[in-house]
Length: 332
Ligand code: NCD
Image 1 (cartoon, protein in one colour):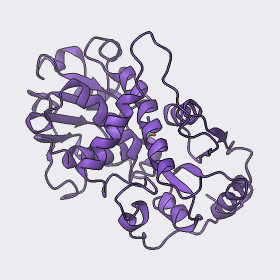
Image 2 (cartoon, protein in one colour):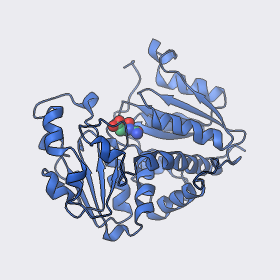
Image 3 (tube, helix red, strand yellow):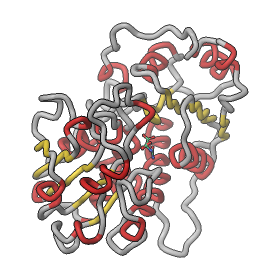
Image 4 (spheres, rainbow, N blue to C red):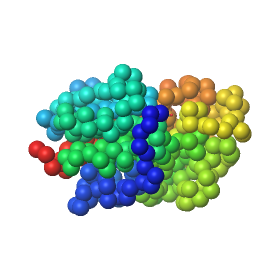
């Protein structure tokens, strides 16, 4: 980490990320997005999905705009999908190469942001290992710049949450009568936090968070979810099962964390265990997957899996978010 200034207290994210009319100025977290806004984003994302066999949907919604991808943490899917989403909407897309950028030389994150702003980058897509960084940047940019959180520490990953909601809604849109089981390293997962937040806003019937005790969320963090440490109980009659990677890079204290073999034996999801779930239950994973650890390879490639659909939906959701913030921006 460089000597970047970090926020001591987070700004009021709701005031920061929403315009007065309720549209998105920035996307920092799903917490302040009401049901109508989430549904509108999912509906718009649907409009960017091409029929099977057709070329990807394109538009000029971002013509003249510049999207900067600033990934200060590794990423494959999220970065590639923001890149394609921007291009398919007609934007110029700048992928900042963090390994060679001045941030490695100790330039503060704000200097990097001001430099990009001076080059008319008007949508900044940020992934960072530091909690609060997207909001910190959003506080300092000019009025016509939007900041999109592409993964913030273990705190949130809002576009992943939206693509997960879209994928679930394509399976069944009756959220109130649905049981969703998120299985794995809940404690260190920004994916679980954003998915849980979005599911609760859409009124999910039952949300189960299933993990070994050392990977369970802090007491009370997910007030209306059922926290379970037994996989069979977690999977029984579930409609949706989402497997998560063990986030080793974020685990400081390995005390109580099972090794991969032990984890696979107790919490790995496979076809046999999926028989406990509903007969048509789907299996999700945000990637990157560790086949044979949190998910069996043949299950990931099998008919229950919607993992590649999640990736396709990821481009559509990012197109929807980019188009939404561009419409709401001051500069034309
Ligand atoms: C996730 C992430 O980076 O938070 N991946 C992703 O964005 N598709 C999950 C992970 O790294 O395990």
